[in-house]
Length: 254
Image 1 (cartoon, rainbow, N blue to C red):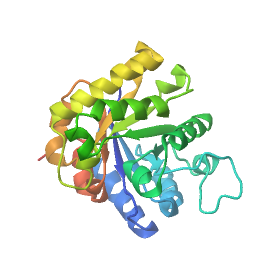
Image 2: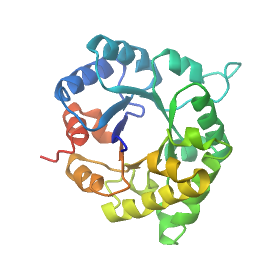
Image 3: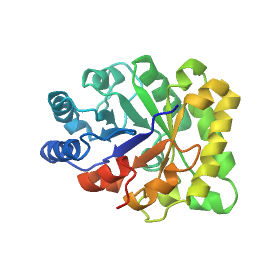
């Protein structure tokens, strides 16, 4: 049985004070909630404050980062290593997000190196894959997603793959208000699971958690979660408001 994961990607929002306030409110709203694992991914500057707060509250909310560099240490100005994240109590790390690929030029090779570095440090990678609207319109979705998954998982042992998280985030549905229908999301995520089975075996495919990301809101989460292969969501804007994110974690559109 795969435990659902609802991950909030805060992107470049929320300083330390705002981050602490948001997590305090979220912890109260999720008190007694069961079923899905809630994950918050603040900016680097707020990781320490949020980590300390989660420990103080003995919260079940997990902590994640939005990016990492694959080297252990060195002259890499502005970068953060996996060991630094681990020291902060970080359990997960988002890698290969479309914004990192498109704006900052991250390649599949870099994403693969980051995946391996995180696994070596005991941090669970959330490997993001997705296609543009143009690629979908020209029937390239399967080719693009397959390539990103294969290259992202290249050289990784199947025993480690089964503990990973993969997030399908159609680029055309990020911050646009557009959302893939639950059937569209299921079709691609089902394809990803079959691909993982081909790469790493049936056990890995059955255990790996695959999320949907792209304009996820309280009013569409229940339908998305009703699909057999969707194990949760990577949430952007709606994760910045405690009330809306808590509803998503509870699969509650009311």
